[in-house]
Structure formats: structure tokens, C-alpha cells
Amino acid sequence: MAEAASELRRYILDRLRRGLTDRCEELLAIMDEVYSLLITVDYPEAVTGGLRRTTDALRAVLERTRGDLTTAIRQDRLARSLAAFERRLGSVSPGGDQLLASDVQE
Image 1 (cartoon, rainbow, N blue to C red):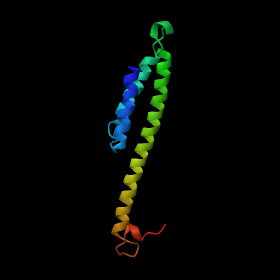
Image 2 (cartoon, one colour; image 1 turned 60 degrees about the horizontal axis):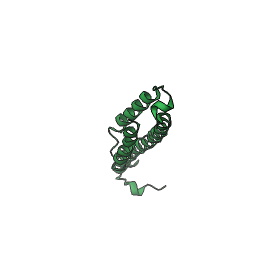
Image 3 (cartoon, helix red, strand yellow; image 1 turned 30 degrees about the vertical axis):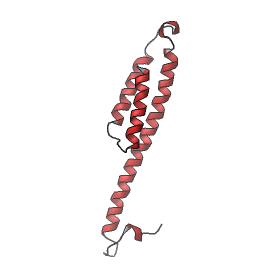
Image 4 (cartoon, rainbow, N blue to C red; image 1 turned 90 degrees about the horizontal axis):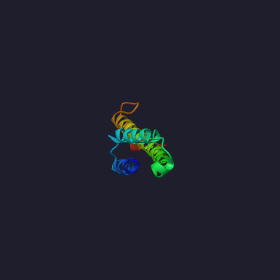
């Protein structure tokens, strides 16, 4: 289960690279659910065969994925906001003339 949850990271990153942020939060929630389930397994290491180490590794993967997804979503929102702002800038200047985004100096 931990390995399958770790594979979700790869899938999420592939979607982010293609600019598809939809469904990624749902997949992250599945990863989190798997981690939450695995952390409750309380048997000796000899019985679980390294489950604690695997669960700890999954936690690290989960947190990295959460950070990457958060960054990607915020960048996507910023890009959409900037595009909307550029469209507004391109439609009317303060004097009523047509103003292009390229006319605005930094």
C-alpha cells in the first residue's frame, strides 16, 4: 500500500507538469489516507517486515508532494490572476485610451 501511495506522487507530478491541477488534491488525500491507515498498524517489526521505515518514507513523500502541489496550485492561481489583470489593462487606460500591457513600464 505504501508503494502504491508513493506512486501517486509520480502521477501527481506528471499531471502538474502538464498543467492539470484538477484531481491532484483528491489524489493527495488518498495518499494521506493510506499513510493514516499504515501508521495505526502496531505490530512488532519482525511481523511487519520494515513497515515502520516504509511508513516513515511515505510520510516524507507525502509532505514533499503536499508542498509541490501547494506551490503549483498557487502558481496557477497567480498566472490566471495576472492574465485577467493584463486583459483589463489592455482594454482601457486611465485616460480612456486603448492601453496594452506592453505599454506598462516596470
